[in-house]
Length: 151
Image 1: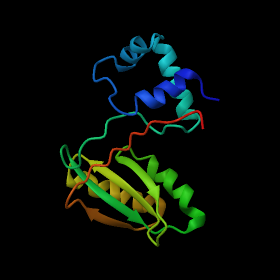
Image 2 (image 1 turned 90 degrees about the horizontal axis):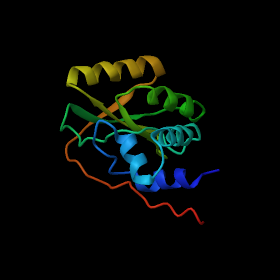
Image 3 (image 1 turned 45 degrees about the vertical axis):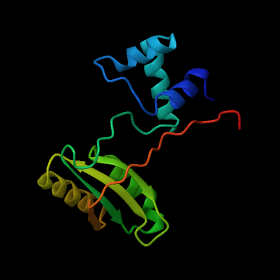
């Protein structure tokens, strides 16, 4: 069950998280609640899998290097493999596609050497090869959506 605070956090802070030393306190002040209320609500949203992470998304190759990766994973191992991939802090997000290459994810690392190290470790840990697709042209898709909780 989502509280009014949960709903407001989901709608108002998909983007434009305050950039300060105290972002959660800033959010709390803007909403008239305590910082502990905000932290607890975000934790509950994460526990209920409404959100996966809170953090910045940096334009590809602006800081470090980025790559789109794909893996061909047997359907019965897809969820377990995605969970393993998600454990890497260099993974921005991943998603399933209806294709032979059915697990796609974005990697971001400080340099090419670090990127190759993470790729090698993911392959070793999962037991599946990756397809490395270097960024040639970047596209921005705004993934912030107003959620209508009345439906």
